Amino acid sequence: MIDHGQRAVVAPSSTERPARAGRGTAGVIVALAALVTVVDAWTWRWFVHPDQGIAQRAAGVLFSPDWYRTYLEVPRAQMGPLAIAASRLPHDGYVVLVAALVLPFLALAAAPLDGRRRDGLWLVACWGLVVPWAQFAWKGHADDALVLVCAALVVHALDRGARPGVVLALWAVALLAKPTAVVFVPLVVSSVETAAWAAAVFVLVWLPFVWDSPAGFLHAAKGVMRVSPHSLWGETGGPAGPPPFWLRPVQLGAGIAAAAWAMARRAPAVALLLAFTVRSLAEMNPAPSYAASVVALALLADARSGRLPVLFTIPALAAFWTSQQALEGASGWPRIAAHLTVITLSLWSLHTTPRRPPARNLALDLRV
Image (tube, rainbow, N blue to C red; front, side, top):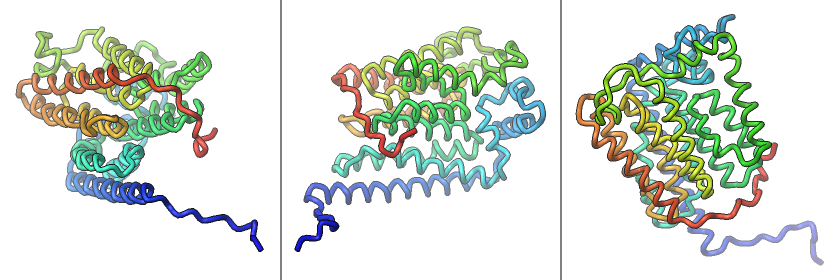
């Protein structure tokens, strides 16, 4: 007699077993890298970075009856309200939690790895994110960590053919974390309808802070950094001091345009890598915090590339470490060259990759 209520058990094939073992190994390595990141950040818990002090002053306004004047009262708070609110956490807890966000980021970044031998290079390279991400934690940059996790979630959702509502929701969280998330627009907008919803999301997040004084908000939005002699602008002959009024709009427009071009070839991870690399290159101050995001997004893109699995990560790491040297007074040209290498490799990768057809809707666990 046949029991029709019993399911047949199919043994994994010989090709599936090594792939599962490889993914298990990848998970262990990613977890260890995350643990080391937390430990590295923990060793700096005694230090309160000035940027965290700025965020905490902004949080004092955000949690007051005049919350909508946060960016008018503290214009140096160049982060989203979610990151500002996080600065109210106890300092030690803040450091640990921001550092620990590297775990979901790396787990999402590594999702396409299938246990092939070449994936070992990527797993070695992911350890290069330990110091950059730890700096997010002890420098008070929860905004960068949060927006990168959202970036990984958006790319993962697009990889799986998620519905537009899911992507829009993730983008809303990214906007709450950091205004820079506006460069996600080419990934979010896929039709006239989604463009309208994206505009509504942007207005919902930021209009309350703009309404009281649009001029004051725009003044704060233009940035507080002065042009460093070792930034791109300083090295190419630009005067030191306050940046020209056109710099931030050009920087933003170039990043969105680069991302849009990459999305035309259905490469969301490379789109974000290009947008953030352009932003880092064009910043007035050659701080390593900007290039740290480039390292993270290079890993995200490399895991989805059919080429050398560290193609983007190696020059991205060079961009991070040369940024610290430029900040300390060394020539900015090595930093500029490293950024340009990431951009060039990204463009070359897109140019030599055939256009992919739209992904099927596989979002069984991402429904809205």
